[in-house]
Length: 248
Image (cartoon, rainbow, N blue to C red; front, side, top):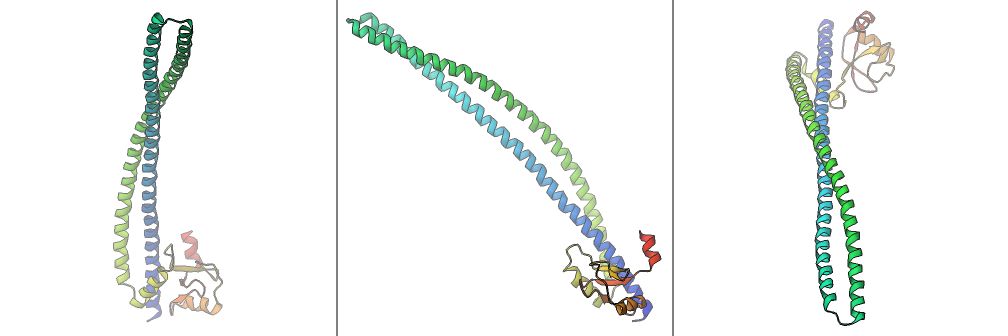
């Protein structure tokens, strides 16, 4: 292959690298879209779980209140029965025993009534907290829906861009020698960020920054063959200083 032909091939490889780098960036953006969506779903899930826990707490308090209410009703009936019995007792000893039992029941009833008052306060607080969480959940749901809409729009734009770039990559690939494409794809498979083609900067590899041999640097400037970094195996190309200055 002539020097000019090799130079053109390298230029196409550089262009292909630019497109590849952009596709990697967009793919990462799409990955972040998934992460954002998952995080938003998790946010709603946590709010919903908190609401369910609060509702369960409120229900437990109300159940406890109803149980005390039923027990007080039963105790009240027992007190009335004792009062009825006192009328028909024949001994002072029996009378005193009934009075003692009645007093114990009344004290127990009084304690339960105090507990019910405390429970009413707790139920009121629990219902207030439940209402606040429900309001928060409603607000979060609306906020998340809006965020998801924006994320979906962003994802759509990214996919459209990615589709265009993939099409451009196919077109570029057809104009690059099969052996060069094979090298490109081989190195690409080993690089997480898809950085395959890098310029030599001040005799250093633009990928791993290792100093390349002087002879290789000279050969790069002649465009007579494809050179690969002896350390990271990326494809190297020489870029005149003025062109680098223009890019930066």
